Length: 348
Ligand SMILES: [Zn+2]
Image (cartoon, rainbow, N blue to C red; front, side, top):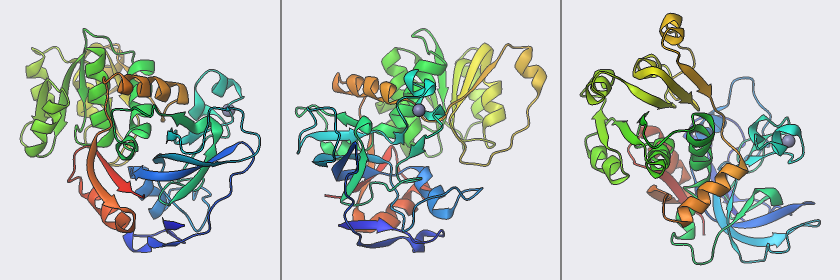
């Protein structure tokens, strides 16, 4: 099968496009014929090598955001509705489904939790095998093309967990979403607007302002031209926002905290600008601020988000597409930030 893989960590040049042996579905697994696979920063970090050298299979096929059709089922599949040819989405996080965390829909806390395209082979190939539990059936009359759906799973799993399950965003609240043009930012804006909240967001290029507004953002700040903390205060009459949705890290973290109104909540799911921040604790406790950490989300949450998408409240947002053999260019584009939404690699 056609695939993109690497045999050792490194820069973009370690990515190879060549045939790999077809995977065979094991007990409880389904083989998916990949339609599309969206990229995430995770793909770049896994290729470059992560601190602590987590074990990843080599040669390694990256990519965790997958849409496609069921192509084969392994032994022991429980759901008889999983038919060959059915359109599906794949949930990126694999967990045991049985422990206390899985049972309470906190999948990423499972001891066996791992991610497609990271600790196991991913979707930048014509075929991928995944556990039955990770298969999310799509309606055959879905309003979105199957290729677009690849832009959905990871960012909406995460945005759903952050806004709906952690901070429990309310319709009468205002949320600051960092980086509207990123995959996760564009998902967060949609979830927040579907809830009915007011959204203030940031962009680094003027052309992204109109795109953010199209998604429903009420106010858009170009952080390269304005001090976003001052703009947030101005836009909220000096009060600040109820919730900050953060995923950038040191570049904006302290200012993001300062944008909060008393009693506000900040939720973060990652950091693309480093890992260490220093902030004043008095500002945290005296204003009754809550900070939530969030790592991905549950399959249950993803299923609810898919339902909202089928009801037209959310949509997979494809920023740019590349064919499989141009995955290197696709990753280069991701690093450049010169896109709005998700970068999707079309496989078949
Ligand atoms: Zn578990």
